[in-house]
Image 1 (cartoon, rainbow, N blue to C red):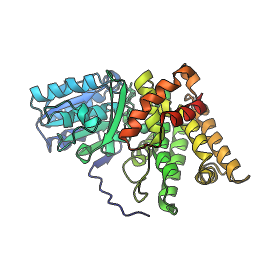
Image 2: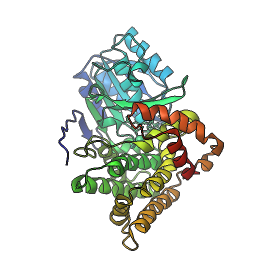
Image 3: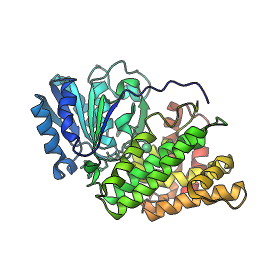
Image 4: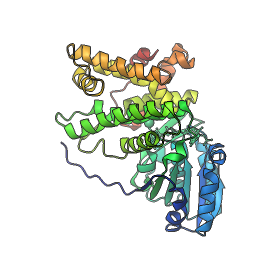
Length: 387
Ligand code: NZQ
Ligand code: ZN
């Protein structure tokens, strides 16, 4: 195991009827909040009323910045930064899923600088400070509620870039599983796929030879996501299953999975972000397309870990290493089919002749993420396994 420092400063308040604490928790950081949220879901499921009432009762003035779209875009972040500066807000409240939380993180950093916030995403500037951020999570998927990452799409350049910075951790995130009861089946499934992808990026790119704690932790996250997602798809208001899925998704990308593994990569995400940037498909849907193809490609080169995955997650014990590896990937793919997430480019009518364009777009992020071995040719080869 490599040396590591694990420090996650986000306070998590988890459970039923916790949303109202957003008022007192935010009041600890400021008196005038920019409230960032999506389109209509929080107005329909009463979370908007719960949050605004709690904030006002805590004496907080609210400046609203709604309308964050899924796969959040830079232009909307720019508008939020402008609003934050004009109104001199001293704190930011995000109410939504990963798209909302990431937009809020970008605004929290952009509000304190005079240059374009996009310079952070392309490594031209580094974040030195950010406005305090408190969150109410409404969708289990991204892990943004307990990490320092954020992902935004620059519509002009058609680039969906993400990075992490310690100033971007939310101060407090409130996770009430009831807030996710209204998440429809397809976004529930996309969220489970995203959380599974988060741990599998570490799991399969890990080069440390002996990491049983991390391996079993990640295998457990995968099994929990699958089991709880299956239960939720039976009953969208199954509190225990929603709670399990929510906590699993948070744990999947809060730093614990990768602690002690040394250098790992996020190749599946690097490729998926191009699909979302170019075709505006849901992040989890894009991963459901990319993961099997990338896993087949990688299992041909490092089959051992894929065989371990097959044994421990799907109880596949017969066959040699290569056979077990292939069967484990097939088992995950079958589960994607079962939860009705797309499993190839054709399913979303993405033309196969677009593969070179997708690969070209992905290479730019591969460079920023220091994954120089991912050339356009290699990415094209992987994408050809996703058709
Ligand atoms: O806009 P509204 O009306 O709120 O609808 C949203 C949106 O259309 C809806 N929704 C959210 N909560 C709901 C709900 N509908 C009913 N009931 C609720 N309680 O769901 C749709 C999708 O929301 P979105 O926030 O886009 O989904 P998710 O949480 O999966 O976030 C995806 C974003 O997270 C980024 C992705 O790139 C993508 O942009 N990620 C962020 C990461 C991070 N910060 O660490 C890492 C991840 O790998 C990921 O890249
Ligand atoms: Zn993801």
